[in-house]
Image (cartoon, rainbow, N blue to C red):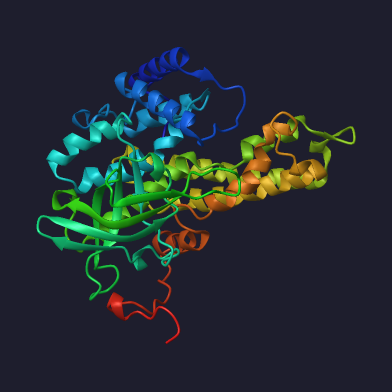
Length: 407
């Protein structure tokens, strides 16, 4: 594929540059902006509202749903240019990148016209409610129940690791509606009002000091049947839409740590010698560069497929798997290079404003979010390489009959 701009894309790129110059702060380093705290969240909402008002939010969404009605290549141009500025785009990757496609595919036209424009402008914030304490990486093993009651459903159960739930107005929640059939067939997907009294959100204090993840408890929470996404029992198809969108969204913002490590290698000296002269550092730099370049090539391949009218496939899982592992390895290696200074988290004292120390604490969670390494490997093995599925002892068994522990 030719990645040179067409005349239309060149004009769009020029408009983006002018707008960013007027509305954002130029980036002086490759470090990511934090997502923690009420101040950061309000700045993110204000930023996204400004984007929406000026036609730069949700570029590929139809205009009637609050988007700009443009193409995926326009989104690529935006991503390339916004990298040069300090922005808070990452705050709404979950809602707009994951929940948005599910609402777009499965909600009624009335619901889409009502809810999507408010999502696109971040007037309403959304979260994804899939993971549960008892299910681990097996999303389909969830136990949150949804029981019909007239024209609505009553939800009871618990979710965990829900990003941004404490700020969310709505969520997309996967529930079990029939335990008498196989675990994949007994699921139903809903939209849910997160502000109702039947929903309790408890932030989880993370080891890096943040509190972005949450536990969410449902105690007779009410969901109108009009908020059902797809057919009763068809929740797994909806979940796959969300999960594929999530892995594509994550692959676009997945930190690899390589640009920051390259800057470190260029600038750091140990015992009066450039660290780039160290054979071990050079070996690691070459290894991680090859992985980073490979991920760039895979992203271009996905963009080519999308530009030709296709969809991004399971290859998006590769960016998540390789990038998340590399990010953790680089952070650990950098802190080893620092020696005793590797435990110093003061942004004024540590190289790269303590980026690597922060990533040592945060990066393990990135390897869990959106699917563990093992889940990603299974997806790539089965859907990309065409290998046989791994044996599943619970296949075809009614969910209620699956053993959960010692008899």
